Image 1 (cartoon, rainbow, N blue to C red):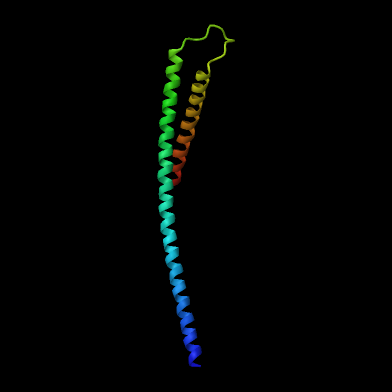
Image 2 (image 1 turned 90 degrees about the vertical axis):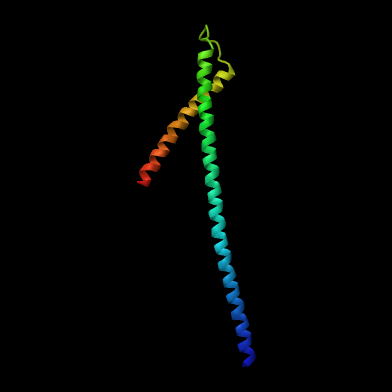
Length: 112
């Protein structure tokens, strides 16, 4: 009878140690996930900043290109590939600003 009690005590001790280790691992996982989500948020903020800067530059370049080049003499002449890129960038930046402003307004209404 004494041997069984010792065996049960050692198994119970082992079980408690494993449970404590599991709780420590869970706490560490929660900390790691919080750090990871903070890093992802910082990365998203940087991407948004770079996107808005690139959008602004594209709009400026499209504007400069429009004022710099004369109108083509005939309506049938094809625009250069550079003009096509700048027109596309201008359209994308306009859409980006529109969607971005809608997202900001949506955030403000949700947080109120």
